[in-house]
Length: 78
Image: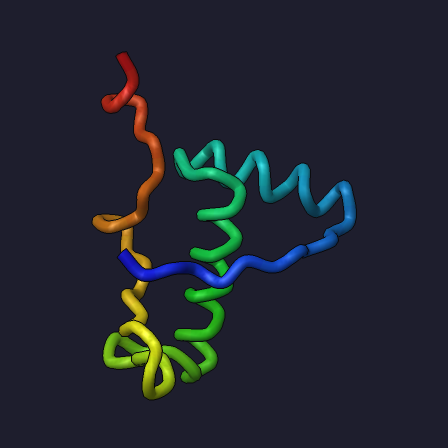
């Protein structure tokens, strides 16, 4: 599995509440929701496509899809 880049992100508390609710509605973590939204925005802007790969020497980037998202779904809970 590819190592993900970690960085600190500061957001407005109200925006975080919106993201938290949105993530819960989609059964994702807040982190996964932010990554999903950013990737979708990059795709719509024409800066990301299914063939996008990292720079030479780095691992290939796998696009996030509903099928490969690591969200915990209600069916997965005991």
